[in-house]
Amino acid sequence: QSERRILLEMLPVLDNFDRGLGATYQDVESFRAGVELIRKQFLEAFRRLNVEQLPLQVGDPFDALNAEALTTFTDPNLPDGSVVAIFERGFNLKGQLLRAARVVVNRR
Image 1 (cartoon, rainbow, N blue to C red):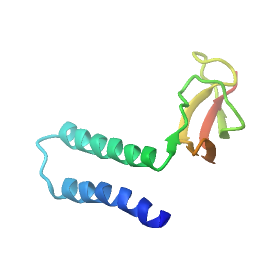
Image 2 (cartoon, helix red, strand yellow; image 1 turned 45 degrees about the vertical axis):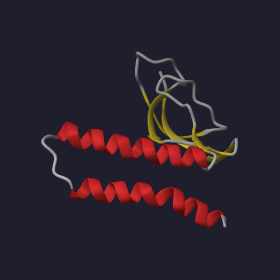
Image 3 (cartoon, rainbow, N blue to C red; image 1 turned 135 degrees about the horizontal axis):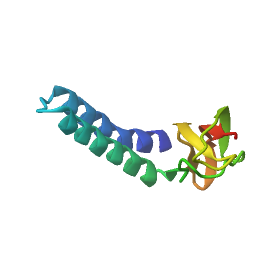
Image 4 (cartoon, rainbow, N blue to C red; image 1 turned 135 degrees about the vertical axis):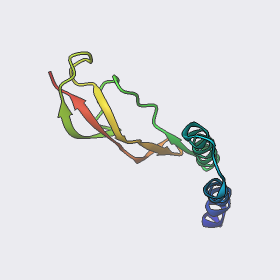
């Protein structure tokens, strides 16, 4: 039953990808706008399934409970120990960690 619910939430996203691939675009920005709308639809389907993206941003302190450090980098414009780049977003399912974010951490 839960698998069916998940699939019914995701099928409209696939439908929009198919429509987008079949469309013609005047420029790259039009294509990008279409992809952004599909991404928004995908995240909204996740929200209805109680999956939420972790609110991690570049410059936030590294949090080992919610993120995995892939490597380090030196950026003099960011604090030591902060996130320099986000390689993969992290997600919670019903308030519990589903997948940790994968990030690059600043070391000065």
